[in-house]
Image 1 (cartoon, helix red, strand yellow):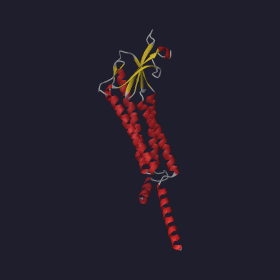
Image 2 (cartoon, one colour; image 1 turned 90 degrees about the vertical axis):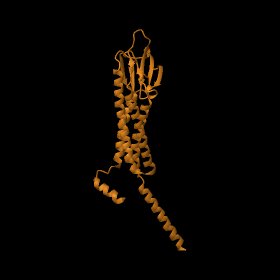
Image 3 (cartoon, helix red, strand yellow; image 1 turned 120 degrees about the vertical axis):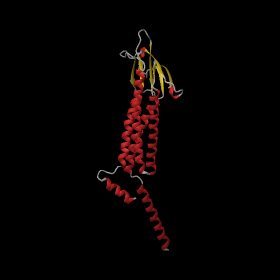
Image 4 (tube, helix red, strand yellow; image 1 turned 180 degrees about the vertical axis):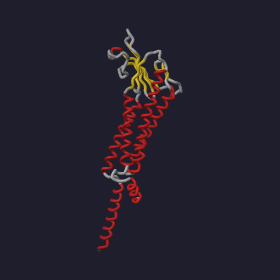
Length: 252
């Protein structure tokens, strides 16, 4: 009569020990909380980058007000398309010598750049774009978004499956995506300088707008989020690197 109870107790101990072993391989509450916090920071950067890439308020180009005219013209563009806008002089602040800002209500006409469809340069107020620079900036932005997606997949696998070694590639993906966002801004700025210098016959003023500010914030936040993820996989400061590696080798 005692044998069945003995075998049942032995099976319970075996399964309980197996459960403790599986929990030991997972993430602790403290680790999971730190990873979620770093992931949240990175997601803020991802959101700002997608917002910047998807909007066309990187640069505003404004014409000067004309005497005895009820309207004035402005334009704004981003990585993919540009918009012409006709604004009412009464809506523009009196202290401004130029038309704008582009957020004011008015008649708008938006279209994608020709170099994405026909391969031709586009003209904005008799100024010609530098299609190679603009295409390079657009490709870099898409590459940065791809790296963000890959980093997010790695973090999701870490949180759902407990695969801690994916933290390191996730950190590199986020850091590289932030660097590519900053390079995109540099290339785009050079394209704007080329555009404004292509024709000086028509006097214009230009200013960078909120989409570019979102891209700048996204680049900084993504690099910071990637560094935070990288710190989570580095050995503690109390341990020497070779001791940490020896401990890893012996445990494996």
